[in-house]
Image 1 (cartoon, rainbow over the protein chains, first blue to last red):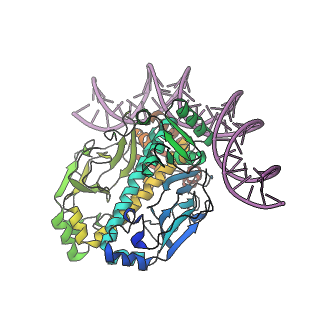
Image 2 (cartoon, helix red, strand yellow; image 1 turned 45 degrees about the vertical axis):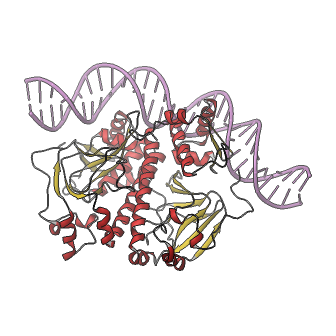
Length: 246
Length: 246
DNA sequence: CGCGATTTTGATCAATGTCAAAGGTGGTGG
DNA sequence: CCACCACCTTTGACATTGATCAAAATCGCG
């Protein structure tokens, strides 16, 4: 799996050409209004796989739009146990929390090489006060994050290991939008250890369950490439939400 | 434990006298601006313990401020397994989700008798467009919900049963603001079954762990009354977040 | 007083974690 | 271009947590 490579992550020339504009806070700004964000942003930044966008407890002075790459959002307990809260992909808006000045509630680690668009944290409150459409968009984004977190909670709280993995991998497929190419599978650049930390399992048990899923001809996950062999069978064992059957 | 009683939950005479005004969406509205919400709301409603504010999958036409009582927010899987996502107390704003017109992503069941202030769902988008301060507040509330959901996820994903229970009960204490009276304990009107559904455990195992916590002189939870015997000892075994030691 | 819901207890079982060691894989530097 | 090294994955034996089942005890309420 290539999580870090010579070729740098993609950075758009300007906001108008930004491919993830419609996914993040900037979405309500169209045409001339895009200037607002263009002037506001501090610039773009590229980070290597393994580096930290911010650490839990740290006072962060910026906010980030993920332009390219994957980022894991995580919590760490005193005992050292780590919980991955979410996998952020391009279009995620990172770093916003109820009290902007408080230390970060979680950490953000680059899984792959990552490109981000950087906003200054301090002037952000003023920005959304001046541009109500951004506030509405922000509320929407945060509501969506809550829904995602609730799905993860349900996954970890209710499902046995195999179903948990099926559900997570299906969710991540969905997040990738489309397979790499015709049926070549989905690029999901995470390790089994990441899966373990996201699902509250051990990486050795994850390995066993992946073997099981493979032997049952449901899916193959290898080297960050996920192939769904039997979508219906997977949805079946994943025990999808009551009333929301795809 | 009294979850339903003859005496009805409290309803404020008007928005000006609303005790939970400062906790919910209405918070930014002061003085004359309170009229905005006062005119907007459909009215108040009282529900009996056990009734549903809304069900998962249902198309809901309202939004709710919890005025009095406790509500459980839950998810149900096809298999019938239930995950409690959060316990809503007075001041919670319920029913907002990314797509207001979509079927509800979760259900809301009254744990006790409950009083709510009801907003019409349809005109809500227009309301926050006209009142940017409400949009900002909404973003804040949703960001807080995300933080809470992340804490629950970490709890269920990383901690063993006893620590999980310690953490949840400490969190709920905190949510009650203050003990009933001097050291009489906290009123937390939930059953062991609720605890089980919130933590991804069985109610019989919850019973065993409560016994353990009692025998270890850490806490006593009985009839919806929680007494913290050893705060430091509890925080110790609860394995509180790295860097956030109360 | 009696009934349904809740809690408790004990015995047994299954799911998942722990430990240890071996085998792969890709990236790096010589 | 090769070889090494760190990290990732796999496998097997065994330990432990928490689930399941069943029945008794308790509580709240009518």
